Amino acid sequence: MKLIGSAIIILSLFLAGKLSCFKLSKRTEFIRLVIDLLEFIKTEINYKKTTMFNLVNNLNKNIYFKNLDILDIFYKNLLKQKSIEISWSEAIAQSQMKYILNQDELIEILKIGSWLGSSSVEEQIFNIDLSLEYLKQNLLRAQGDKNKYYKIYNNFGILSGIALVILIW
Image 1 (cartoon, rainbow, N blue to C red):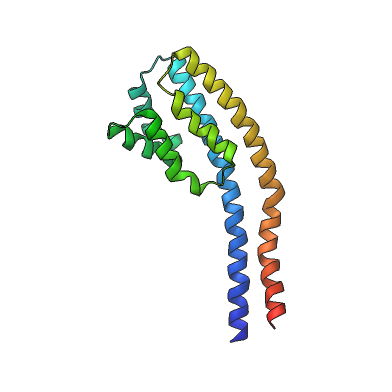
Image 2: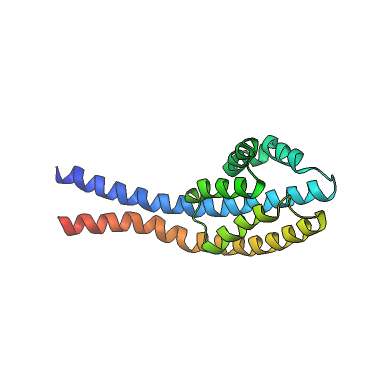
């Protein structure tokens, strides 16, 4: 019985470490997708002069962004006649728990909804460029955190499980 309990403790702490590693990976993936999203939006409004409604339709149909679940929520909110800012904020709020975003990353991503579609093309391009620069720096920081903590979380889970079992026995 002790052996089964020990195996369960080790396995659960191992999985807790793996979950932490997974969340670090999701954070970098999310930031990378938002950067790609902003570059796509910049291209659409700068060169194609796409209207906001067509832009949202194009984003929702784009296969590359299917993993970015905020777009689906954003699109559904817009169909409910909510403003762009409210739709974007609600989409981010509903998705933020999946990605361990820092407070400053979250604020920067939330800002996108405040200027998207509500200013001139030139102002939107300027804001996109600022957000891109900021998010690219945060992506580098997130990748550094992932590289730094991935092995720690991975090994800490199993080692803490073994240590706890040793203490219990």
